[in-house]
Length: 160
Image (cartoon, rainbow, N blue to C red; front, side, top):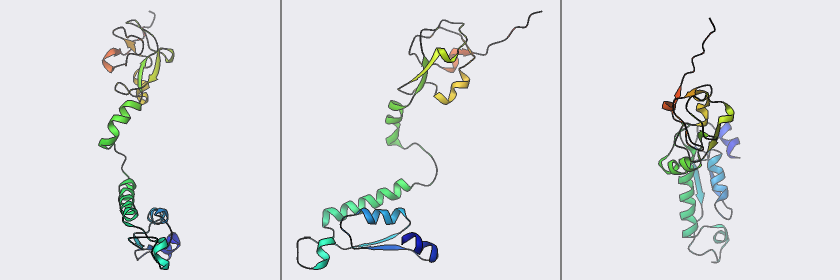
């Protein structure tokens, strides 16, 4: 109903009065656009009374608040950016353009001369056009990353 209410009452803040076990439905409500969550709280779910069974104890309430805060961060601002916590995994798992075999200086680089391997750190795979068809100004060992300074534009000579 969150989506229906948001569409029908676009000028008001929509939320969820949660009478379920756990925190999943509250998180789902946030994802759908709910911005208010009412969740029952108890110190002991085994206590007598209807509400205690579906209420959150202190640990559960902390998890709900934590996860709602995480959702807000995960929601982001629509701008793609690398966060500080992503730098190490991106470098470790990212790819670089490397030599598929030892290549002597003067080689005009073709697809057969390159491969893509982790870790990142050299030229990115999307920079392949800056490598293919260029001539090596120095030799490159197998698995060594290409650098722009290793490459020169090939000058085609025409017969006179």
